[in-house]
Length: 124
Image (tube, rainbow, N blue to C red; front, side, top):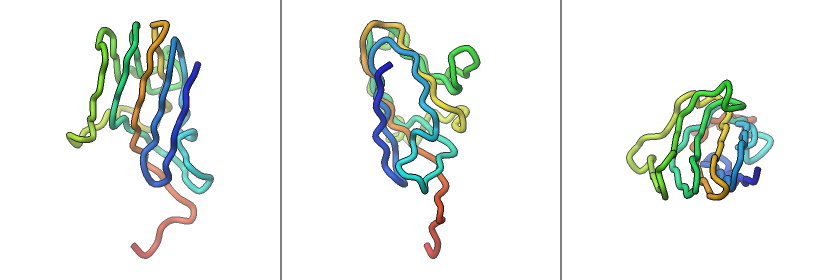
């Protein structure tokens, strides 16, 4: 289970997952600071390569999860969904559970976030 998350406050997060894995990304892991509370996350851009199948679920495991993205047999993928004003927002308030059935590969997800802040922005 190898992954990294790059968070930007009041902006997107980028999740990179590699190898044969079953990884859960908690919404709280997408927070860039203590004053940012993540309440939802939608997949805005997908890039992948694998000798197996990447699958993205919304929940803590594939057993209880809602499958939102299945890249079985997709080959190399580069889907800039937000360029077309769409995101994969099914169950956006649930955690991301990511699996890969292959021995190698990389999945990169750019995730747009819904957040609250403390203190909240005022006067805008």
